[in-house]
Amino acid sequence: MLHRNGELTSSPQGHETLDTLIDGKLRILQSRAGYRFSLDALLLAHFITIKRREKIVDLGTGNGVIPLVLAYLHPSATVTGVELQTAMVERARRNVELNERERQIRIIGGDVRAVKQLGAAASFDVVVCNPPYRKPGSGRVSANDEKQIARHEMAGNLVDFLCAGSFLLRTKGRLSIVYPAVRFIDLLAAMRQARIEPKRLRMVHSRPKVEASLVLAEGIKGGKSGLEVSAPLMIYRRGKQYTGEVASMIAGSNKPVSGFESQV
Image 1 (cartoon, helix red, strand yellow):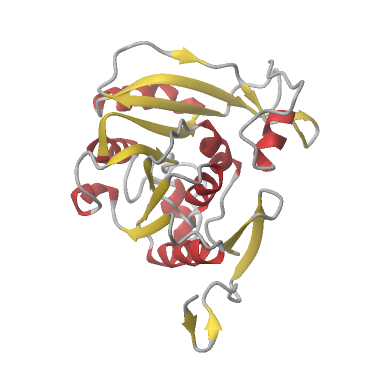
Image 2 (tube, rainbow, N blue to C red):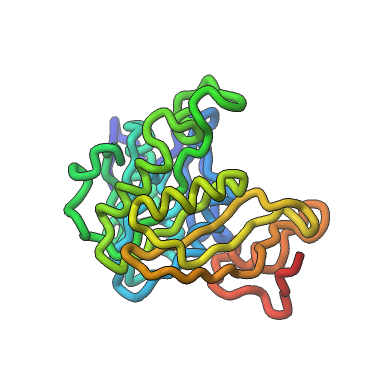
């Protein structure tokens, strides 16, 4: 492991926390006050279709959570995480090191708006992204730069991320994204504008009989029309008790818990 002033760079600094995922199998360094991953990343990682030995790129990787979960779930895949913010690039690299995934995951600094500097055209099989979703100045704007850029379209909007993904994807490659349900129509229109044909959708609800909060979408570059709408995904059964499906994801399984049914 790398060292700095005699200390492991993968050790948490004073402004960081060390958190775990998948029953402690993954360890994640995060800023105490800055951007921190949410359940969205885990839902997206389990939604993606991944085949053996595929090359994946995560646009806007943040602390590197999605590459780490994908590497755990798909040991034959290789993942490149792209992040604009220098501090988070460094932290994502430390997280890769901390989890000993250097052979499977690469983290690079870069801007999706300058996609040709990130990689060659048609060089990936799968693109994944959890992009900023709020218009600049809308909603509550955090004073923390990490949170601002991660949540608000200050350094790239939905179209920028989808166009970058389309450039990096091979023909018939797949792009998966999580986005607020309230901007569902914007998402579908932008996907088609980027030549990513929507092929699979799943709405995410916090609990039954509550309107959807998120949408998970997968599209194919240059794909034909035809859309599969999966059963809704419920996060909670009652109170703060996770449904069997979400509990299974948190435990690191690709399969829902036996007997669980996702119903509104």
